[in-house]
Image 1 (cartoon, rainbow, N blue to C red):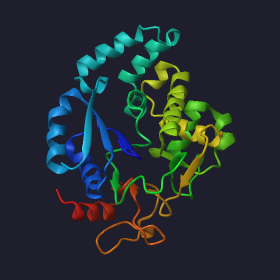
Image 2 (tube, rainbow, N blue to C red):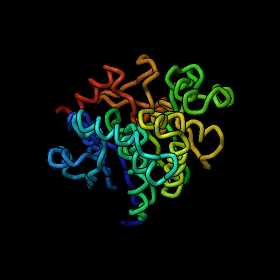
Image 3 (cartoon, helix red, strand yellow):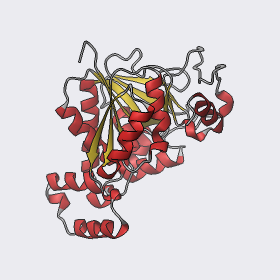
Length: 300
């Protein structure tokens, strides 16, 4: 694989190609030379393969077929749910893991697939786990990445206790005591995380450990990955971390920023405060000005 082999993992199960077009095309546009792995349902394989070959033939893309309750029609989903209600998940961790992997919310279930892939492909040096629907690349996403984890921070104006979704996730997953302990900290987004292979493997394992501690009856419908992510960070369990502030770093997480803060180049690239293009732009779809700029640069 060479001296430095980079890997990107993303869950695209249930998405149509138009939902991930900018993600894939922008990655090809910046000349990414590592491997992109997309986890998709079996029924998506043909259409996704054709899409990648047409839109990004230069990319090394692996499509990994997965199973999940959401690939089935409503009646089949109902049958699975009723059957799982009869299973003694809490008594058998292996069974609980398989059930969560199949029925759990995609935000959490994806980490099972990440863990399995990383365990069976040890040759990579650096790994990015990323949302795929609302991410655009403007430069090599591994630019300057060394050891440890690189984490995308949200607006510094918001804390875990003051951002409604994060507050509810933290309370529901960990209770009032944890909210009191870390509620005053800046929200860290779980949608884009990258780092060296060992750090990423440890991180994915820790996310799943948090998920497995909660009852299956709760975890099967909850999207607690961000609560887990922030708890691990602010309780000092992640080791070496680099906190990537929006518009100042490798990652710009934009959902809670105001569009008045954005500076675009003449060719429609979002710039950091130092005038350089942001390598990884996350949550651009919340801002029409960015959607228009990126669509103009990469028309359908």
